[in-house]
Length: 136
Image 1 (cartoon, rainbow, N blue to C red):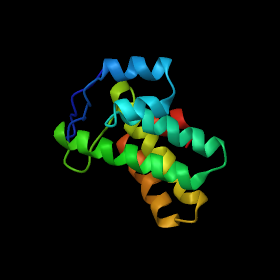
Image 2: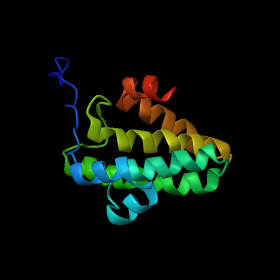
Image 3: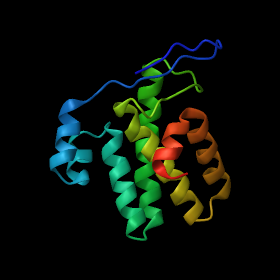
Image 4: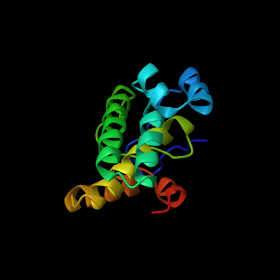
């Protein structure tokens, strides 16, 4: 559910759904889904999260950066102008937000502190609900 912004700020940006990619991710390895649907951020986020869990922050950084950039492309096509809400509650946005979160974690793990801070701030500015859902 989206709400009209009564304070006059930028409107929420809602990415379009990709039901085929979503179904594939639910049933397949994220690497297969990323290869078949390379613009699908949730597959890249899943790969980054898996690499982080395995203790491989460099690989996680690469996967997360890919998901992040693919998401930025989609956000711009959806009318986003570099700032404004990207609600977690809208499921198609979650792949981008998860990629952004994973990018921040991976950046911190490899000592890229400026990038880690930027990602943390960007996530908080985009979706406080994502920060809560993803654990900070």
